[in-house]
Length: 210
Length: 116
Image (cartoon, rainbow over all chains, first blue to last red; front, side, top):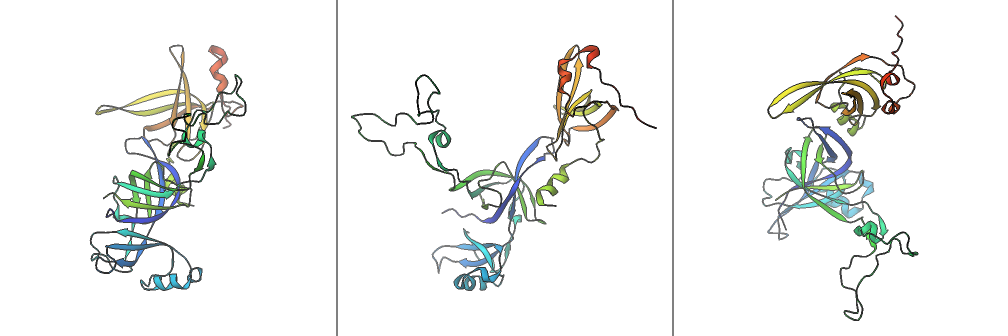
């Protein structure tokens, strides 16, 4: 496991900004934090050093009793999402302390993790960019099919990992080396160059590259 | 105003004059060549204004040595030093692409009558 501090956020949407040299940069706006520290995990007790962060405040009655009891220890109210981040030294963090977007700097490269948009059960043309079959010259009912998926007597089976139709999207995706264009601590915003996995209002995790 | 609108508003330039398709404009463009920076003027007829926030653009067409030249400018780009409206034209369409098929006398645009 890599030791990397991060923050929890929500994708707001995409826009474009002008750089100082006049070029246009596409950016994704993420509203991240402030995330209070709910629990500290230590080498002695749990076997590893980590801090547990919370995000998105909710009224207490939205949570069940065990969740409420866990969040009460930090005395920071009730939150919807919890996420653990491994850190080398937990002594510099205190219970209830806020982690904000100020842990990042503009120009820094980070990792962004989200859940990609679900495309459902997709065929091979959409899922793996296969070419499909010709539209005419005697082809019937096979225009978007994969064609042959293997040989005959040998090996008498389809190899594992063969690209075929199936569920596409709606899985955890990490975008590495995402560049931070700007941070706005007063609004808790991070502007990331390019795309970020997931829909608008999607839950994303921004992690420092360790 | 939501967050995205706020970010876009910060990027937008409010110092530009109003103009629309059919108007003749002089666009002063900053050009960076190596370390030197100079200003080039592109004068022509606006044939399209794509309205929006930071993504709005406009197309200026001119005839240079008998060849039609069109240039697309991002409206809010920092490369644009300033825009002068030379004259206002009277056209019926918002996008006067038909100018591309015309030349000479036929490609003229009537100037707008203004009441004083």
